[in-house]
Image (cartoon, rainbow, N blue to C red; front, side, top):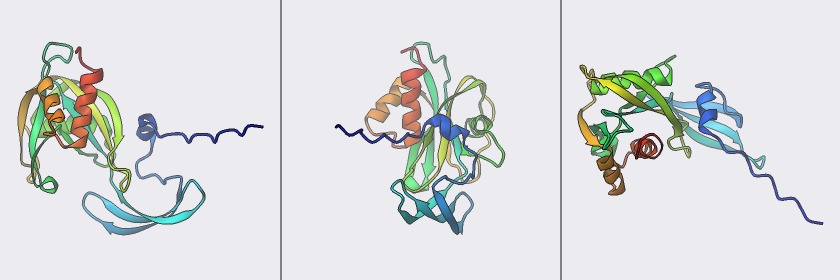
Length: 206
């Protein structure tokens, strides 16, 4: 008599992530104790029940979530589409890196509104259309941070309004050139690399 193989666990999808209530209690959380509360994130020590029924304490960084946007300066379906990137100073990276516009969700703000706001603040542009691409967890080993990624088209130029601690310049780049930078390791920022690859693979005419 053959034994049935154990059922594979369900995996979390981007749709499930988007449907979650920000700040909601994880289903496997038994207890939560706040260790530190900063300007951007909170550090908690949770008591967690694992899939095998065992329990343990787990340090987790809680983040309000963020939105990011791939701004297309030209038609994504046209020849050699162009995107806007930021060459931005990041203290944690110890220098300047290429990034797409992105930022933290304000209280009560939708991801789409956040993407539009960050596009305006960081590049000065507004968009005729902002289309959702995907939602990602950044580093699930120790944080619940989620980034909702969008694509912006039909850009109109205006004035940027960066925060005092933001040091960045807008760079116009062919999408093909950005992909070469990813290949060569010159775009180490994870959200930016994934967003550009997704847009190139699923949203352009190439």
